[in-house]
Length: 455
Ligand code: UD1
Ligand code: CA
Image 1 (cartoon, rainbow, N blue to C red):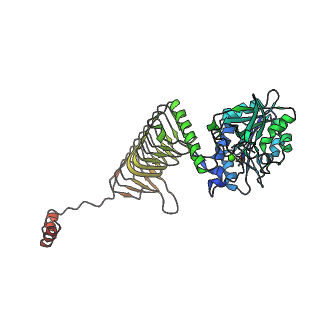
Image 2: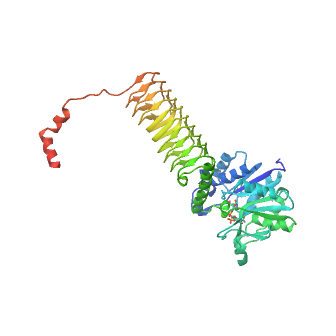
Image 3: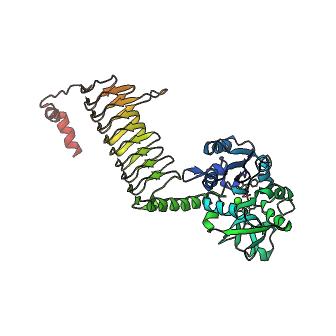
């Protein structure tokens, strides 16, 4: 049984999203490295909902999987037929029957709703006579939205665009879709909704007029238009991305991060940056990146699933893939790729190198063009490089292999066996030089003739 003092959140995500023109369901498209439905769920979670339900379309194991990944405790309900937003909410009837202080309905395609708005609406329906509260916004172009019919602060009804009269269509105050209903009334009000309208659908928005007819109050809370941005096509998807990136950049700068050209840096919702991190232009933070204080991310670097510890430097033109963990003061330079590998304190991988499935000890120095050969086409193997080891340029380390602490590997080696600590290992062929050979070759009569023709 759910607590009757709690907020119940229900995210509607059963829409078809035909205008996305995509093989993927709309709610799985991403902004700031997270699915649209994941954003709605995160807002609800941050707002403090006690229980969460997500209504998805029929036969969508992919959407169910994403919901499970974002919130294993969330309940998934399938709406077999798409018969309107009130019908969609009723698919979660078992959650509603368990009771709640406030039901909050969110749309899976409206990712910019703020947790504060969710809380404000939920609070509004738990005090006084207000049974329904809606997040409204002033639309620059209200076409397509439900209009809020108001009298002062009172919300009288919501009229869907298709059902609105000419005068009602002139109203610019619109319904964002975010709505709270007092928990004790929610199920009864939803069950009263009829489908007698232009689209023959059960409109969630009808709950407003129904609540008022039963003698309860309804109200609205005003939010900026950008909070209400819904994604119906890929143009709106990019607009959402833009708004979110701007919010994230400002949030990081306010928290003590320097962005030299903020508009060229792209974050994920979960990017964590410590104080005095410096980010140069054209950097992409994919999901799961944590950068500790004082680290520098040079221009044109791409990071995902990586940890960069205090004072480490990355790039320019570096790629950190999932599982990269750079120790304090470590250096990863240009055209270096690190995957599933830890670098100890002050370890240096300065140029043109691939380090994958590896452990690199502190103060180790990896020369230009070093490759950990971690994959034989079937399995992955580990390379261990001890503290203070020196790997000469253009070395292939064929894993599984261990280079002992303090060992040196000569440039151009292909290392297939473990190297003892403090040893020198090299597989280089000895240098052979033939004095005067090049000069004699140039001076052969046939080559002299050819050289003459060319010039
Ligand atoms: C809805 C609102 C409208 C509001 C607008 C804001 C209703 C009746 N109308 O209109 O007042 O201004 O959003 O963007 O609520 N969904 C389901 N199952 C359904 C129908 C919809 O899960 O049977 C989901 C969709 O996936 C989507 C959300 O509900 O996440 C909204 O549905 P949509 O069809 O986009 O509603 P709008 O016509 O945009
Ligand atoms: Ca919509």
